[in-house]
Amino acid sequence: MLPRGSTSTPSPFSTFDEAEDAAEKIVPFKTLVSELKGLGFDPEAGTNVTLIPYPEIIARLAPYQGVPLAELDPGIRRCIQAQRACRAYRFHFAREDRAREGSFWPDFFNVRRVTSIKGWWFDALVVVSDGTVLFRNVAGQARTDRVEKQTNPLGPFQRAGESAGSALIN
Image (cartoon, rainbow, N blue to C red; front, side, top):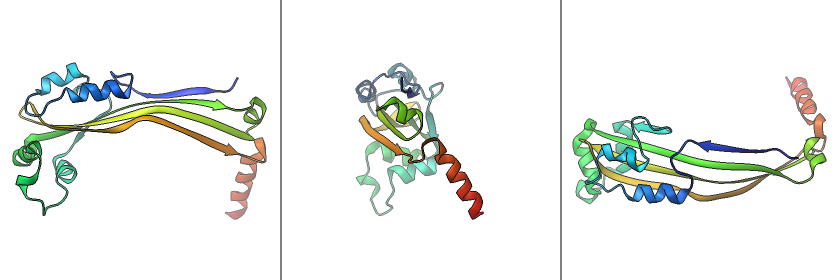
């Protein structure tokens, strides 16, 4: 009888592993931008895609000016040379399931609430220029598992006490 919920970032992938496997198929200097959609990474019509401006691309991929250009990844070098013709896309996919645990009455009266949160998140950075992928990198968390606990000794009156306290202070 306790509430349940979920948060989902629309994604063509149902698991972290699916997203990671698809990202591994993106090969720098071989994969075309037109092929990204078929892999689940659509920069044009996909959801949760962020276009990263050129100055931020440089700040992310080459943050230290003291590193010689020759030491950088070939795709990053090509991006720097292409300047504004270089684009980067950040794809973010996630799933989170929330379930309340414990006894009904303490939860119902807002005395003690325990929420179990499980899920995953995945980010892929894809750098392109002239219709070809130059660089890709992934990050994420394959398994999220945490518990949120909240105790309100005054139960349903807790908020009223907080409101009254802030009114007295102000």
